[in-house]
Image (tube, rainbow over all chains, first blue to last red; front, top):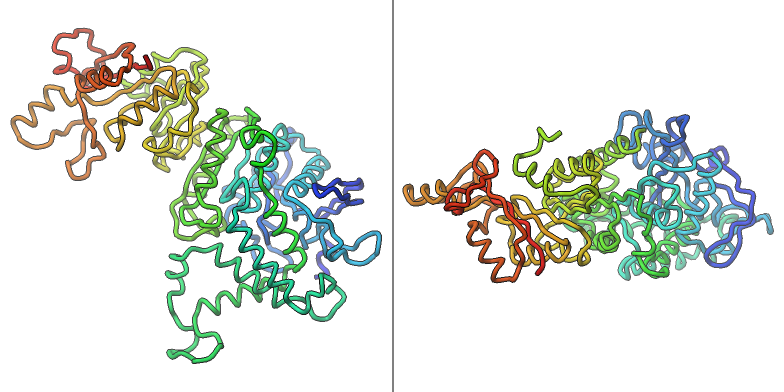
Length: 373
Length: 200
């Protein structure tokens, strides 16, 4: 993981007040940019990543050696065209890919924070992103785009810094985390904390990391990203290696093998404490409890909204987006919305969904004309 | 620009004044609201059920929500638009009664256009062939038609009286899409009709 030291970073040398009331003395924000900022500085798009994403939305990820998580959508000639746009993607506050988080060194103790890292919120993540955007000299973003937790950040941008963005594109997301979503996150956190290697978060100097717990957390979460239909279609009751049951507890079914693989490959690139902090940030997210409710939160009249949801997504179902739309309709906001028919569940926002990609492309094309980019 | 508008839509666009606030329910690919926002500075919103329609609207920079007029009109507050348009769609609604009530609740007025089932050729076709009539704007077979609530000029007129809906004015169009100014046997000679209605 030494390569993380070489990631592009900005140092924010000021006290950052967090929603929990505590301060960060200073903060590093790791980010990656693609394309070029034009002279008018009006072609910048901020892409916000989901729970386990990072700043490498396209190109090769130096840690996993795989393509970036939104390689299908972002790049030269693609829907978010880096020949036209200056794309900025940051690693979120609390993350483990170079931005300050629980695995970073606490300046006070000169040791990794661990659980001494203050609890963060989606609002805190966005405040730090905003400081980076200021540092890059961008007054107004062409768009803020994100799926899942990235969509939460996009909505937070719309509520906090609406004057600084032209349009917001929240995908497969919600204005709040539901009880069911919190429940799944809590099981994941309990799995991590039950791992004897977790040691109350002080495992950074130890040989053994809480990999088992983190892998289980990932396996649970991964089920919520798919759909029953997609699981059945992909795996059914197919057996992994043999034509017969093992009548034991080794891997019999393909779905077991798949989930184990998801868990094992995840722990190589992700920090268990970061998982605790970021899932908690998602659980705390609820824009409707802010003063005046959603109508007040999204009161900026000039801002354009373009929502996407996926029909088989049961983690962030279409009904969540419709609740936001209801508030936006009541204040006559400039909102658009598409529900994409798919059986791929929540993960659809990361996958090859031609109708979604076409819809997004058309919205972007329309906005390029609108602001005469 | 008007060239790409259907003739009935040109008529509707002439009924909209500058700087109005308009909701187009079933806006299709957004030609009407695109025209209105560019030429009359109208603040437009749209609802469209098909993804391809919503996509075309997005490409034009329009604010359009994918939705179903049968269910998704409830969310709009009373009098939030000066005009709500429903063109060539009422006959495909599951709940036309509820939809029309919503239209005049949301808008200060509603402009509703539909194919007149009382048109003489429609009557003639049914009378002489004994089969469900078809024409340019009703091109489907009985078994695949989305048009499940067809009505005539007279039916709609009666409906407005029954529901105490105020008819501000109406326009009767011939097959070419031109307005007929002769009201003689209007139900027989009208191919499509445009009603402007509001709450009483």
